[in-house]
Image 1 (tube, rainbow, N blue to C red):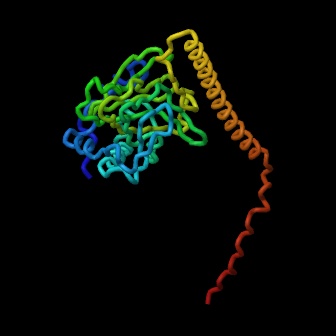
Image 2 (tube, rainbow, N blue to C red; image 1 turned 135 degrees about the vertical axis):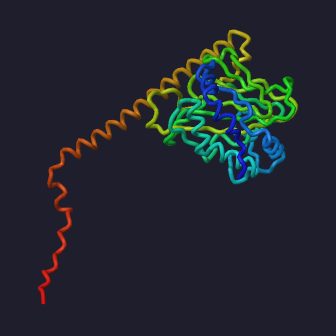
Image 3 (cartoon, rainbow, N blue to C red; image 1 turned 90 degrees about the vertical axis):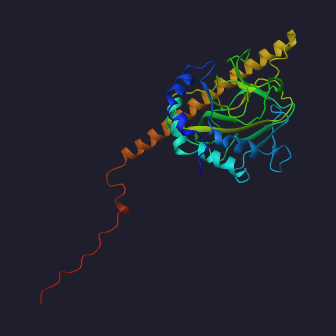
Length: 306
């Protein structure tokens, strides 16, 4: 199997990538140039399906208009499937751990929220923060990696990836979605991101993956339990709009604190349950399980010599 990831470049430069990631504002991120080997990049771009591909699904959210997604590895084009498998492999995850300082990273073979994404003309992604932990999934979402595959992208096509401040009042940085550029960023309650300027011209193509850690590896709460969208933040023009946005902000803050308290209660309940189990075990009498012991096997009589 030919490698698509440019290991030779990035295993040498991982310390530089780490320094950029750790110091980045408004939240930890790093742009990665030449993530894909130059001689294989066009293979990925050429394999990306057009808008009429039968396996696309329309994105099921009003906050992501005119956008299609494919999360199924069984129908991905072969070279794109190969690339995703490599991004989920041990060597690449080791590289991510070095760059981000997050140990024990886990891939997502189901590509939940990831896979291939195609935003058509008018497509956008409302600024938001991703959920950190979902329902009964025993993992915490920690990182998002995006690779762009847009030939001949021009500024007038819009669709730049936006990194917002925590209050979602200003775009601190824009990342153009040009072919071959990758973006790695930390997903938590401070990482407000999206692209609010609708796409113009050709479709906006990308491949995205998420990486997780086990819940037991997390020492502090750094995210929320739901995706929080910031709709209409740029359209506030009068007192009524600002009051509406203030109400949304208060609800968002309340939801974050509620998620934090729920998470702490869940952790406390788990610890109490474990302590209770250990206490019951310690209080058992020494012969409590004596009746469950099997009787020793009968020994054969000694064999007499001839």
